[in-house]
Length: 160
Image (cartoon, rainbow, N blue to C red):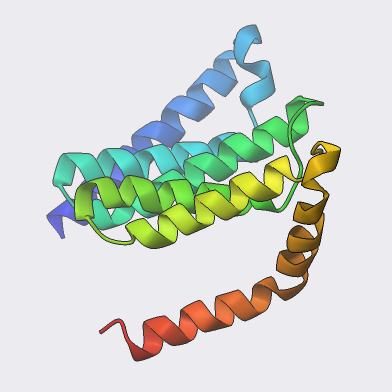
């Protein structure tokens, strides 16, 4: 119970600072008073709590929320920001990798997700001699739900 109280303490402090800065109306922070910032703040609170209390299972949640907050900020603010589905799998892969660094679990899944994401991100514009990759990308984009089903069955049947 004490550790949960610390989490809520961190959360209240972070959200209080966010709204205090919003109320004080700092011009330099004007573009950051939005819901993606709150998402990232909650993620940072999860990370602070995870590392300070040595409860590393929350690293995934914290990294995921920070990544999503940054991504949604990028989509709102920058024209060059990549709006592709593979960014989400990249964020999940990085979150799993961050958790792996402390728990030593899920390295293979993390590497697979990051690898697929990088291939998909760079498959948008490739030289002519990589035309065969477009067929692979089309196949993966068409049948990726089957991959999720297979991974789910694997976790239900073999990961105990």
